[in-house]
Amino acid sequence: MQTNRACLSIASIMFIAWGIATMPIPAAIAADSFPPVSDLPASKQLPDPLVMLSGERIASREAWEAKRKPELAQLFQHYMYGYFPKEKITVTGRVDREDQEYFGGKATKRQVTLDLGHKTLPKINLLVVVPNKRTGPAPVFLGINFCGNFAVLPDADIPLTDAWVYDSCAGQQNNRATEASRGKQTDMWAIEQTIDRGYAVALFHTADVDPDKNDFSDGVHPHFVPDGQRRNDDDWGTIAAWAWAMSRAVDYLVTDKDLDAKRIAAVGHSRNGKTSLLAGAFDERIALAIPHQAGCGGTAPSRGTVGESVTRINTSFPHWFCGNFKQFNDRPERLPFDQHCLVAMMAPRPVLLSNAVEDQWANPSGQFEVLQGARPVYKLYGADDLDDAKMPPLGKLIDGKLGYYIREGKHSMTREDWKVFCDFADKHFGGK
Ligand code: GCU
Image 1 (cartoon, rainbow, N blue to C red):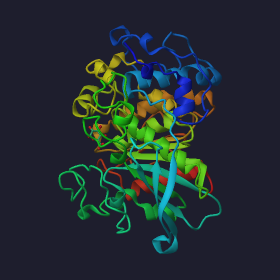
Image 2: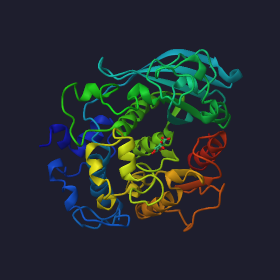
Image 3: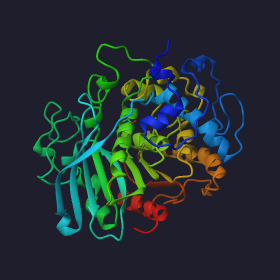
Image 4: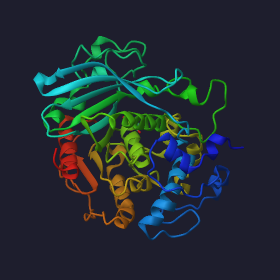
């Protein structure tokens, strides 16, 4: 039996949860009409993104937008990430602290509390830093961070998070943040350097939304599935919850007159890279996505044979995806899509898959195939500018709409990576 939550139509997902009318209304597929996994055709190759579940071939941009893209939106939710909530959320931003002379006068820093309109929903602490020297509204990188906003800058004015933090966030005690981790991720976010390039940066902490643990008792979850109520196999997992929160941050960013609502880039590292791609695929207000070293469940093919597998990710992180995704353990060839289809949902917006050669866990070469696999959809928009059939040499940015980058080194996000992110954004966002 499926619930109303599962039977939600595409129209209500797009128009209500995201608050924007970006997709035409398709014929909704009732969730209980999705084939059981054993009836899905097996394909070792990446499935053709332009062929519907019914076998119908899509040949135009209009048909992609009216039929196939909405179908993919449902397929990804049903079989992999779980359904986004249909409830209308009104976001109110309250600026708690402002410093107009930040970085020696180069920027204005604001600490904003996002209220999602219900006592049962957590508040999101959004840190917004905007360059002061600019000729108009600034383009902005929206990201989610691992350890709390106080860890991204060495700044005593940013309160310690009272949310749960990872063991790997230096200085935590019993998963509570301590002063020892203040500013520890300054290099990872390189905010001042990005300000110098003319971009604003807006960040929040994943644990404000959903602490990264295998339970659904905290964060946004109890609001949508009250305690004691059984979760369905297509209820959303943590990655979808984080992506949804990115869209709630966008709800606020588009109201900030200092920021350019048409130039919002979603960025994230690794699990947060998976999140930024998902957010971009479902929210067209996100004009560009940089899922950095995102790997399995994000930018690497689920059918891939290098690095992390579907079985492995579902075992190590059972809460990241919906229950249905576990049915693809050891049979990812039955997935009626692969991650190239999620990239394709970004079309024609730019997306950069960036990698490190020692990070084979994230399958950099498989990600290049994913990019190739999205080309037919970009082509429908006249936006298939990926001429390269082979991966570029280390350190060379392919800066087309289907962008790719691989550097020396390991799994990490660095100042050097941020230079590349800014180069990519410069190319596509034009003047600052
Ligand atoms: C693990 C996980 C990856 C994930 C990474 C991260 O390695 O297997 O899927 O991307 O953590 O988020 O750093």
